[in-house]
Length: 110
Image 1: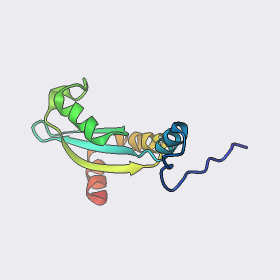
Image 2: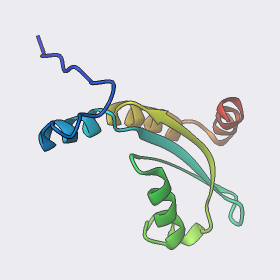
Image 3: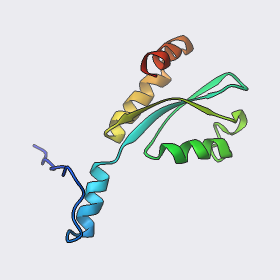
């Protein structure tokens, strides 16, 4: 059976080690599943990240090859998840929806 990790409810104090602080930050990390929309090209993009603001900036700056040609992008929906595995699973499900279902999903969870 796997070992359990106790997640502290607040960050370690100054006296705690840097290792404990890194572990706290890692365990408290929030992941995002996001849906972007290009009004100019009427196109949606679905992705996941742990740095939502930075990722959207990169999309709009043209650093992401798959979205570069369809700028500018507008954030339509962002959902937080506790782990990367959860965010990747939701991203995969969303990418398998057809356009009408995805729009329904956006309207439901907006």
